[in-house]
Amino acid sequence: PGAPRRGRTPKHASTDTVRQIAGSRYLRLMAALVFCTAIATQWTTFQLSVVADQRFAGNPDQITRFFGTFNFIVGAAGFTFQMLLTSVFLRRFGVTAVILILPMTLAFGSAVTFLFPVFLAVLFTNAADQGLRFSIDKAAYELLYLPIPPGQRHSIKAAIDIVGNRIADAVGGVLLGLATGGFLMFPGGGLGVPGTAAVIFILSVAWAVIGWRLRKAYVSAIEASIHQKVTEIAGRRSP
Image 1 (cartoon, one colour):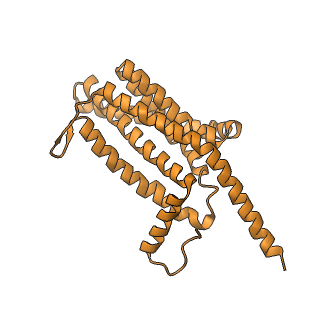
Image 2: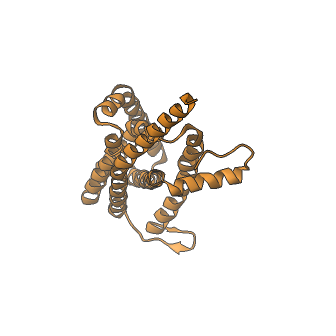
Image 3: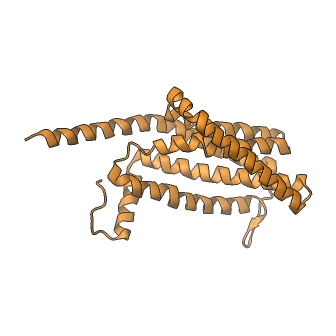
């Protein structure tokens, strides 16, 4: 389907965007990738808050100091990685390989946390999440939008990145509540750090599988995009 025409209402434009995503295997995989990413990273953040509260015995000053130091160090490391290594990884391994690094790292970290539910295991998993997600993973993810025609890219990106993320955050929050302490009038499952680590492991594996399936879909989308541009150029040159 083509880009939304001028004069269409936002409702019709949104409907067209949803249809475009639903009708494209490549875009469905990207939406699924965003969905798994949002929930998995939400749960890893929850784990860190739990173990930090336990480690510092609920002391608000120590917890605040810890998170301030942690976020500063991880942010600085992520920025350094972004500046020095992201382009190297993308050139050497390609977009579709780099997009697998974060889910595989989280799967490893969550497996270690499940087996050894200690502070350092959760700390490693969260550091990997934040350090990689906002550097190499973000750069690779943005490149996945290149095969989408420019006229459609903005609306599709907004639908997946903004709307899709918000829906995933809501679903992840409800599931997290139901799995741990409860949600509204519903009792929780009482999962602790090992239980939530098992769920994160499953989500990370699903995320990696989706990323793997995106490899062929990405190549096909690039080929279709090049073919479309060649056809457009040829049409302009023909008398």
